[in-house]
Amino acid sequence: MQLSVAQGAGAVRVSPILQVRGLTKRFGPLEVLKGIDFAVAPQELVFVIGPSGSGKSTLLRCCNRLEDADSGSILLDGVELMDPKCDLNAMRRRIGMVFQSFNLYPHLTVLGNVTLAMRKVLGKSRREADEIGLAALDRVGLADKAAAYPAALSGGQQQRVAIARALCLNPKVMLFDEPTSALDPELVGSVLAVMRDLREAGMTMVVVSHEMRFAREAADRIVFMEAGCIVEEGPPEQIFSAPANARTRAFVAEIAR
Amino acid sequence: MTGFERFAESFFNPTLIGRYWPEIVSGMLITVEIALAVVATGIMLGFGLACVRSYRVLPLNAFIVVFVDVFRALPPLVLILILYFGLPNIGLNLSAFTVLWLVLSLVLAAFAEEILWAGILSVRKGQWDAARSTGLGFGQTLVSVILPQAVRLAIPPLTNRTIAITKNTALGSVIGVSEVIYQAQSAVSFSGNATPLMMAAIGYLLIFAPVVALGSFIERRFAWRRA
Image (tube, rainbow over all chains, first blue to last red; front, side, top):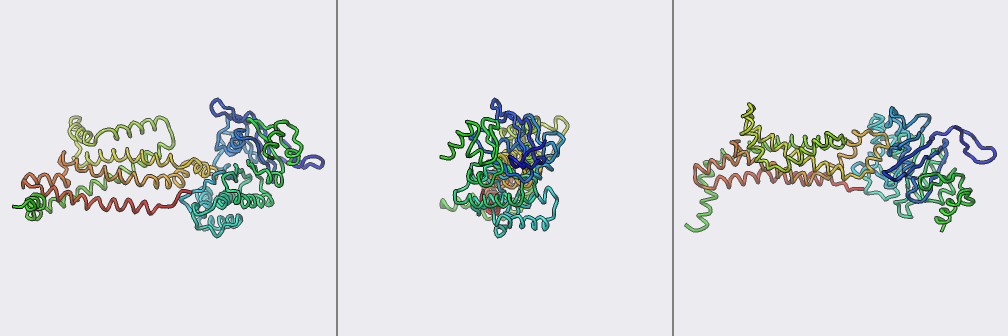
């Protein structure tokens, strides 16, 4: 399938790096995802917005199968993740994920946090892993905290370490699940700055977030979800200024207040 | 004879201390031997069971739950008597030492499993998410991320439980294991004086006070805070 990155005239058509088709998921009687179709082009920054309970986080968690979807297809770089024979651990290395609650390992130092997967999964030596880990920490501005334990860091710093931890594995796509929701307002900026740098470096990103100003300024495309469906998607100007759908309009008006 | 002299005569008789200390010390060594064996096998088996349980294979977990509940519910003395006096009837002769070691190991394993399992469950689910999302497998996540945190949570209750169960080595006196209480009791029946029991009590203090200290040292050693 082809997909247009820039809308309107002169649209560039490239094959998506992540493509979700007909994804469904229920928790007991609750239908959380009702057949989601969704694609992300290389280097695209897609923002997923919507009211709580709309299935945004579940969609994200299905993309690396932390949550198992009931049916549908998830293609990452041409590999079907829903295939039972798929080597999930190998695929997950190529999908970085950042969580609302950071989820750093409290018993390891900052450097230990970012190097664990490189050493256990990629089999890198401690020295090589440390080198890559320090470079990643430097990228998020925290190389000086390498020896600290997570509990000694602010929330913003912890989240930047979590981003570095994902970056170390050189992922094709980064998934952000409400990365700033657990942060004090004055710490949000530092995390968004790192995400902005990643975007400029060409990282493909899918972001579930309520940071609408950041969405408006940095996103290539906004996906609006409600009740397990994608209601509308388009460039930020369209979604925020001239939404086609009445429900999108209501949601945008609500969060703008 | 004053009250104090009578007290000292009954509990701290120097002649009897001089006569019986070699027996008491040899009993203490046996107690330490069984205690170490019980701690090693009991905790290893308990941790092994908790790890197996985290894979959530239904029949295995049912077995573990039944094992744990039975061995936590039954008084160790009952198990010791059943094994020591019952097994020979089916042609299985275990030494008193083996029976004591086996029963206490299984009881400690049952408690250690429950304690570590509780520790594993109380590590937040986000830790699993984070580790699995970086490509770590289930076993790798368990070993590198979950267990270090679970063990730290488990150490205070595990220390208590380990001390409580290893003190049950005294039950060996019932089936003739020549540990410290057995030695003290036979000394009491020869001498008609409680001094050897007092010596045994002091012996227990000497054995277990360092264990308590070790427990709080380990707690402090792993004292990183939860993020």
